[in-house]
Amino acid sequence: MTIKKALSALLCLIICAGLVLPAFADDGLRYTVNVPFANVLPGPDAERDPIWTLYEGDAVYVTKTENNFGFITLRSNGVSGWVYMPLLVFSGAPAENTESIAGIYVKDMPSKTVYIEGEESFSADGLKVFAEYSDGKPDAEINGCRLYVPDFSAHGKKTVYVSYTAPGGAVFQTSFSVEVVKVPLDNMTLVSLPDKTHYIEGEKLDLTGIEIKLSYLDGRPDETYNAEQLLENGDFTILGCHSEKQGKALYYGRHTINIYYKYSEIVCSFGVEAVKKTLLSLELVTPPDSLVTYSSLSAPDLEGMTLRAVYDNGEETTVYPRDCDVECDPSKFVLGTGNKVKVSFEGMSVTLDFTFAIDEVTGLKIVTPKVLNFILGEKIDLSQLKVYITKQSGAETEIKNYSFRGLDPSVSGTQTAQVTYGEFSAVFNVNITPYYQKGDVDGRGDVTAADARAALRAAVKLSSLTGKAFDAADADRDGEITASDARIILRAAVKLEDIISFDGLIILPK
Image (tube, rainbow, N blue to C red; front, side, top):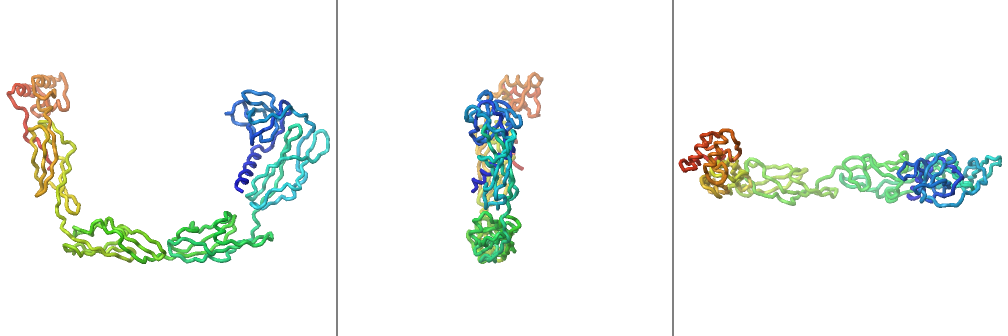
């Protein structure tokens, strides 16, 4: 049925696009359109926009060809254009037009001109089409017309197109109107309500037991439909005022369920009611991740706990700590077991037994600075070092009153630093490289006269030093390079002075 409707609609669109089928020039070679439709283009190019459309069976006369396109002229309106030749089939030389037909018209309408939508199909019984002639010949009935019938699945005025191809190949068209009316329904009544009209919120709407009756105006017998038939028949729509439908859970309150047949004005309604669901039981499914608490100031952590709530509508749901109320007095907790915590949900509760314990220190955790590689003589900056004590509960608390030892800034290589707090300690490694020490401006690992010369050139602005080279040339650590720095480096090169001082080179957090 759907395919027929689709084809019918397509045929209607084809007719509406053409409006009036043209009569064609009767000179040139005769071809017939061999596909559902063929476009007439303004030039011999398939990319052009069409200026007209031909349909299967139409006869055309090709007067010349170019690039696989044939040129035609439409006699009725003078439009000329090109048609792609593979869409046409050769029908021979033009036949002599033996009839001087000027047009066609409907002499007698079909016997039936009113149809019921979706129930009746078009009938051409009684239809008579006549031709009128330009040579004075009296009008006469013609046969062999093609009819283009629109979709009858929706009510309204419909136009039926009639097309006739004369013996000479000229095509003529006329049309007439018929009416498609609504199904002659008198009313739809509710014979019986569904078996279930009272629900608990969350239960699904069930139409089992419902029965409706359709009464008609044209004398046909009444029809009755049960729930299964209503749900399977596409002519019926069942929908509540808040989108309630079969199999959908109902929320608390009254609901109006509407049944429509085809048209919005044909409707019958009934009401159902959903009362609030009642909690029947609450049980512990998963206990908290830990049943040990260490605080007398706040309620224990219930993370990981799940409860199962069962309702009188058969619904089961998982309840999480965020959904619950917690009743306890942590200030009255005693060391050991037996500390009760009441967890409530919707008027029901479960009781958990917690162990209260002292949150003892279990170790140290250190977070080291990102930079742990230093140069001999460079300040070892550990100001970003963070030390935490870890407790039995998993809590971490940062501390400052720890002891630190293990680093010697005057010795290169990898060294282990140790942080100690009470009986607990933690270690990390620091690496000190000998390169770019004070005075080693060129970074070759020792202090020479060449380094003093480089510092002197920088002092008199003959060159520029940056980064580690600048730090190495600033022998007196005053933040600038002067001739004094060059002198100090030269004395260090000849072993007259030791320019590396390691006092205060370890910077710890305050």
